[in-house]
Amino acid sequence: MFRSVLRTSAIQASRSASRPIIGRVGPAISAPVFNVSSVRSYHEKVLDHYQNPRNVGTLNKNDINVGTGLVGAPACGDVMRLQIQVDEETGTIKDVKFKTFGCGSAIASSSYVTELVKGKTLEEALKIKNTAIAKELSLPPVKLHCSMLAEDAIKSAVKDYRAKRLVKKPTLGPESEVAASGSSATA
Amino acid sequence: MSRPLHVIHLLPLDPVKSFFQLFPKTFPEGGPPQDSFMTSPKALRREYRVLQSENHPDILIGSSALNKAGSSGDASFSSIINRAYTTLRNPYSRIAHLIQLYHPQELDITQDDTAKELIAKFQSQSPESSLEYKEMLLMVLEAHESLEMAEQESELEDLSAENDERIKESEKTIDAIIQNHWPITDWDALMMEAIRLKYWVNIQNGIKEWEPGKPVHLTH
Image (cartoon, rainbow over the protein chains, first blue to last red):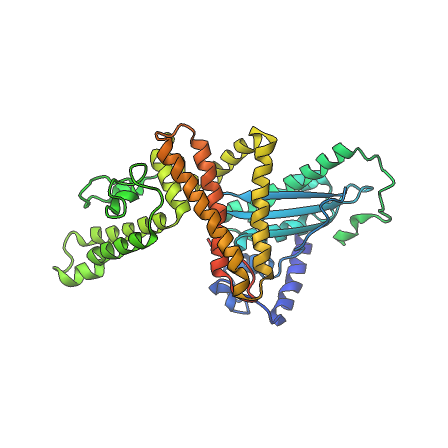
């Protein structure tokens, strides 16, 4: 999984170099090429997700197959909304969108976590630990709570999805419009 | 909980724990609850400048004997004044400081764990409080969306005014709790209001840092 993410990051990173609209970012980012080998693995991934966050957006929160997680990090005032769309047949997450109002690390963590959960079952998604996110993005200790926000958001989204289903009790109902397997997202 | 302030020996009031005491003109009684929680940012700034001009290490080194024993102490005094000022000028860090000073467990709500525990407790109180918290988060996201969609600064005026109002209301609520319910028994209520204030202050920062075409990210 991580490998595939790495590959996409590399592609995205090269794409981003030609992107004209890069907004304000920290001083380290203004250099277009990351050639400082000692810090490369750290910066590249965080910065990539920070500059080109994946899966930003909104899903229909009223859709029975969509679970919405809304969480805040009270100490820094960051807020994140993460939505998952679950394929009823396979029980896997076939789409995921997020929106984060927060610092770079929080945005990078949320973006990374959306890539991570796509194609996973709910159980697998629940097992994602913030320490793994922080490690993958090499977040410094002071920014650990930013990755915590992403973990909280996934948990909250799954919880919302399940709560919704409990209330409505759909038993593979006619409202399922899923035709093909949703696991193609991992390809 | 570390108390770096004990470092200062040179102050007239030895061990000073409270940042409020460093600004006697703004807080003549040593800070809330005797003084109001609502401060005048201008007065605080003026006093800060005076203190800095009296205590800045460059000035001291330049004017008095070269590197006397006290100079390193003076440098740290100057940096403590800086920290105190930064803490007190922002209403959120001001209330967080006050809570840490007087809370029986010296709780520091700027710690994520502490704040989260508090929120979990608050949300589990009733479905209403849980909903209230979610609504607040939604409001933050909506403000964020307005920031992202805005194309000109003038479009932010309403958002900014609305948010300033929220900050002021929150400060008033905090002041009322401090003035009317001291000594505090319901610390949780005060701390929850402080957390609300944190979210509003964050929106304010987002507005301040907004520039056309720039992605809306926060720095902290």
